[in-house]
Length: 211
Image (cartoon, rainbow, N blue to C red; front, top):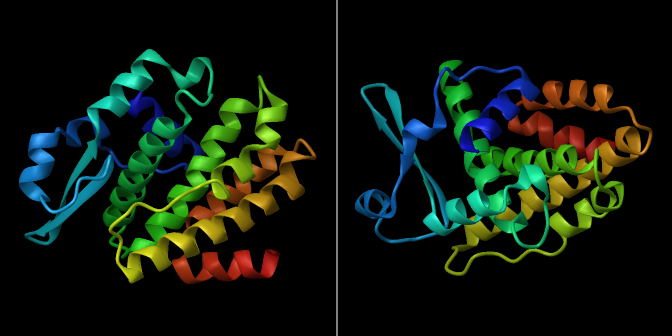
């Protein structure tokens, strides 16, 4: 499923990383050897070396097991939504960072989080729309209102997550009103591809002016 999400995001945004996220998957022992101070259920590890980047993606084994048993492609519900969101977030971080690195463009932690929040919304939306329009209509408040921050975050981290959440919620509202409710999905995908290529400053400015 990891590779399906990666292919889906790269196809959606028309980008190529020329990498396979599965080759960068870390188990708990490997993650703990690199980052022993925290143990979130999803974590992208990044290290600079010889002018390049080393990446590793950790996803809790329980997340992988649950999604193997409750495949979101067959249905997205309370039994698999939260784990699916973790997987999409991790793959989103991986794809965005790898693509930006290939283009030799810097990326901020806020930019990664904002794009991941948007990717979670859009990925779930595209899964739900063909089979459950009511669930798709309820997706935005479900993702962006009913959330809680992980314990142990410092003030900067809390602020970053809150800013990413509020801006992604506003942008999802724009997508709903301008495209989803009108059935203009092709136009929505075109905007998403354009938005993906903006700088962090331009993304936040676009959201602020579109609100």
